[in-house]
Image 1 (cartoon, rainbow, N blue to C red):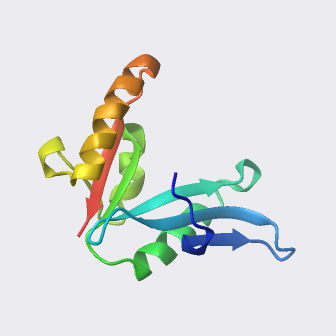
Image 2 (cartoon, rainbow, N blue to C red):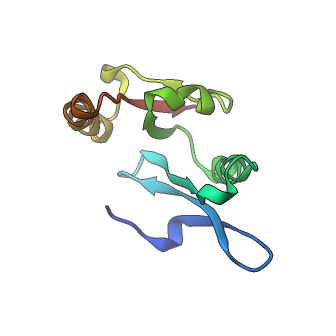
Length: 117
């Protein structure tokens, strides 16, 4: 939703083959989300996601938010992200969290909203 290629950072190999990507996605003037982090399956466990995330974090205003599956929280805490309670979430993420609760119940999956100051 609301994808704009100009916000994306790509990780590529020497042949310009895309290995991974990510973006800083705005949700209003003061809410920026670290989003769309993805790595080609054959290129995982090589530090590509870490490099994309660190590149984006270095350029991002604070606070910076992200959403992830709850079981991935520990991956993001290494950069200082912390999980938010529902009351701490900006309105966009509260709406998303309500929807995710409904969908997550169907698939036995929980979503987490995290924040980096």
